[in-house]
Amino acid sequence: GDSVTQMEGPVTLSEEAFLTINCTYTATGYPSLFWYVQYPGEGLQLLLKATKADDKGSNKGFEATYRKETTSFHLEKGSVQVSDSAVYFCALSGEGFKTIFGAGTRLFVKA
Amino acid sequence: ETGVTQSPTHLIKTRGQQVTLRCSSQSGHNTVSWYQQALGQGPQFIFQYYREEENGRGNFPPRFSGLQFPNYSSELNVNALELDDSALYLCASPSGSYNEQFFGPGTRLTVL
Image (tube, rainbow over all chains, first blue to last red; front, side, top):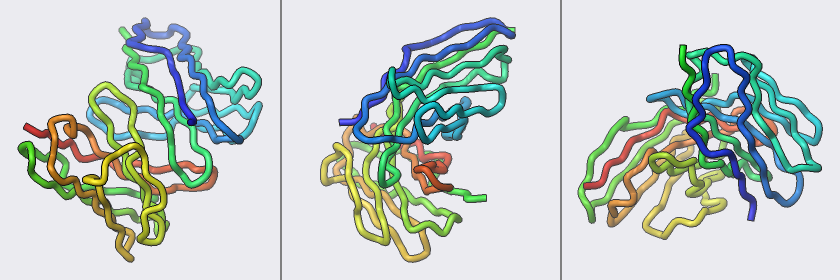
């Protein structure tokens, strides 16, 4: 069945460092890919999405490119802030709105 | 805004009891999904309701059941609670195209 694998955390960075969180997926068909973020004590929020191969999703300085040839959707940000500290989930969704999530990667950003 | 609300925020039950969690969506969409998020894990798909009928289920036993009502509200019922049912339960409703979902804040269930 469909699945998502993302790098284990926690990831600890200093403010203004470059962030990469790796995500790979296994799916039949052509799923949509997402990154969700969960801030402490809050629910899931959609961070960005890509719906077809080579699409780049972007939001709040974060970017991810849908790479069909490597079945990847890595999350990147050029300069992280303390406020980016959260748990990040890579996810995919095919037909019918069922969403499959990775295990999540916790990010700590130090001032 | 396609807001999704859930109640209660927190709940404590003992093993063997039954629990009902509630969800309400302002989206007007006739699809609602429920997810279980255990501590330190990603959300796991429980089931989805479409036009008041179950329309897909994840790897959860029958003691997890649901209802969807004509006003787009929904319930998740769990019978014979087990300790491993302790988790954050999330309700989600479509918020746009391309299978994008809007999640509610969740209900934190603790089973003692």
